Length: 287
Image (cartoon, rainbow, N blue to C red):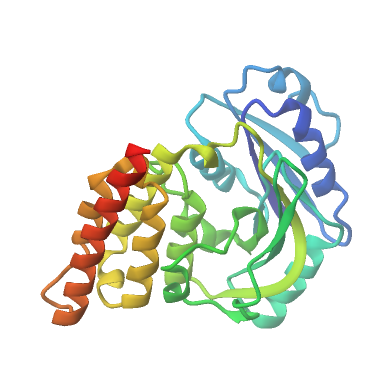
């Protein structure tokens, strides 16, 4: 059996679309766990009485999507777990194709490509062509995340070991992916099998939470960044987009990437770059 974990919060009008895309998966035995994160829009009243025996509804207090996913992991009865957000959908055959890939490759977890839709109807295929199908290592994820939670299928015992860090205000999937590749064999199959929709009220639009999450990513993987200049450069560039909000904090965050273990030239680069970021932040705030 595959356990499908769907966390939801005030998505009653979209939830049925996600659930239907899961229940329409053919060739696999599955259960769908809807974990309601304290919705106030009637989600509980609508779904707690669902007549489909494959659907289980779990009510929680409002503690965030990470807690809801962890609750789903705890309650999962299947040998495998797949995640799906309540405003996204799977394409037909997604689970069977991924299960075949996982078994063939003898992987602990697999993920696929997805189509990322903006509110204006434009879309992008992710990951890009620079990410080749095959085994994925942690160092590939230090610069940026390309494993979206909705694209993962993994062995239950492996995903339970990793779990989601409930302290993260954003970018939980990046943190999860980094730790997943540390402890499990993760394979990328580049078939496009998921549609991810960015909503107007999406948490991913909150820059304060984004900056906070990036600092947490850096702190948890500090030693990896200290030994990877390319990842350090990319991380510092990513900080720049939050410069109007974070101001000097961007530069301060970058300077913590300096270390006696780095060559002098790398430390000099990091220091100069941090000053540049602080100056750019001040200019952007002043516009």
